[in-house]
Structures are given as structure tokens and as C-alpha cells.
Length: 185
Image (cartoon, rainbow, N blue to C red; front, side):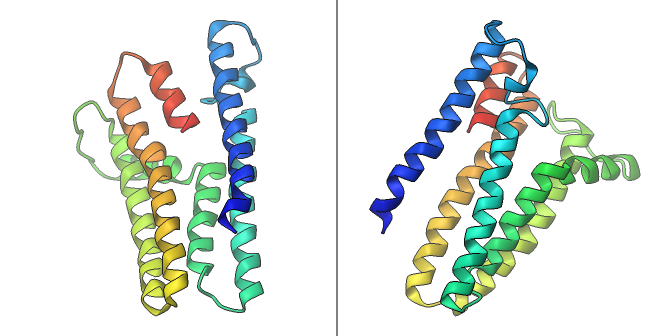
């Protein structure tokens, strides 16, 4: 089964690389439409990301109904949050509200807004990952292996989406490169 997914994975990663190269071409002036920038909201690459997120949620729901078990629904909720957060800028908006409501500390060169965003991401992430862990305790061994695979892949998403984003905010030199790593990763 996994070997059948390799061509799909190669296709998806190839499209990601295409958008990264288009971003470089935009920065170089070869492409003039800012929708080729991976850092722009509502860019072509962001819409592609939304499509992937909707596909993940849809496949997890489909698989749950197909096997007639709720084992994958906690993961569905997590990726649904990722989609909504990505599309509606949930952590940015709520992080801004936290920044305005409380005297958040400044850490290194992170803004108070960034600290608020981290708090929001940690809050939702902790809640959803707790649901995943609780369901993990009751899953069959085969499903537990899938959970571990999903956790590894989700950890990579968090590394780029949050970790590299924070480095991007803290580092003043090479902002274009960090932005490409963050949004292209």
C-alpha cells in the first residue's frame, strides 16, 4: 500500500518545489505577479496548501467511515484546525488579542504578538494532541503505527510552520531565505 503512495508523494513534493522556484523567480524579478510569492497571503502556493489540508481532512473522514471506527477522527480535528488556522489566521488574530489584553513578555527579538501566537498555537495544539493521545491508548496496534507515522509527519509541519517561523521573526538577515524555508517547507 505504501509503495502505491510514493508517486503521489513525489507529485505533491514536486508541486511544492515548483512554488519554491516560482518564489525565487519572483524575488529575482523574473515573475512580477506577487501571487507567486510563498509569503503572500492568498498566493497560489497558499491556495495549494489549503487544497492539501482539505484533502487530508476529507481522506481522514472517508477512512474513518470506511473502517467504521473513530480512530482517525482526532487527527481529522487536528488537521481541520490547521486548515482553519491557515485560512482564517486564527493564531495571528487571537495572538493579537492576547497581546492587546495582557502585558506579554518580549523574548529575544520576538514581538509580544509572536508570544501571543505561540500561546494560541500551544493551547489548541495541546488540546488536540491530548485527544489524539487518549484515542491512541485505545487503538489497535496497526492503528497505533499509523498514529506514530502521522505524529512524525505532523512534527515536521510544526517544525517548519512554527519553529522556522519564529526563527524567521528573530533573524534580521536572510529574511527571504527564512521565509522560503518556512512557507516552502
